[in-house]
Amino acid sequence: MDLPTTTAWRPVYFPAGFMWQPSTTAVGQKLPFSIIGGGRWTPGNHYLLGDGMNTAGLSCAELYFPIEAHYAAEELVDKTNLTPQDFIYWALQFQTVAEVANALPTINIVAKRWYSESNWRPFHWILADKTGITAILEPQNETLTLQPISIPVLTNTPNYLAHLKRLADLVKATQLNTATLASYTGALPSGNLPTSRFQRAAVHLAQLSTSASPKDQLLALLDDVAIPRTAQRLQRHNLDYTHYEIVMDLTTQTLTFKSMRTLEQHQLKLSDLVKNNSAHVVAYPFT
Image 1: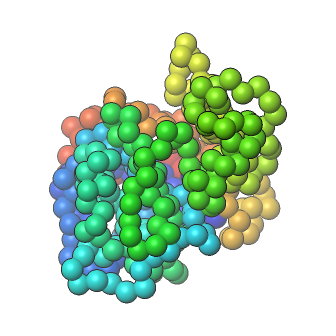
Image 2: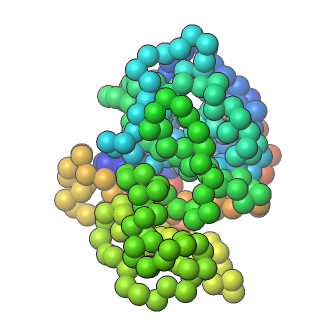
């Protein structure tokens, strides 16, 4: 997860029954499923989530979508109003990507500040469930629609279709699919641009070995697209760097958290957390 210098990000566990509160209302909503994800504490005792999964096997992650993100200017009385920072909590109330898609017409994502944050954030989101279905939500107008995707990669702006066009140009493919990417042997772009990182991630993902550890290969893939934690970036509060990497196994409900500060890896199994911390929010000290 790439963010500017700010409060430390860490794994955070929320039990089923936890009352999360959208910043647009004083009324809390009870989580039907326990959640584990990458988050950070903010003043007012609120946690901002960057990604997460629930005990039903659904995951969601947010990525920056500046310039292209469009949100409603006003709240609507006949819908559930959410800021972009509220969306992951809302999405992880469901069991599948299909359920999220069906419920999208009931919400309104509004361009209003989230608690102590100075403003709303321009996000788009990627969701996946344990059946293997993956989809993205790119709010380019006020009609919210999930878009199923066959190449399950998302980085920051531009939009997904623009990323695909550049990827197709790179591999010189008229039909872009996993097989095309798996057989690609050409050069890949370097650097930290979202387009370059998308292309490297998509090709490396298609070329994962079936005989090696998926977790280790995915962490190596994430290492390749990580934005370095340099002294320059640490000194400037407007420069992003990769705070952490997360691999979520939706079948075993295991989260692997890698701190980019210490390079340590920590594994947390959601079923164990439910058993041991049934009624408490837990923020783990892995930053």
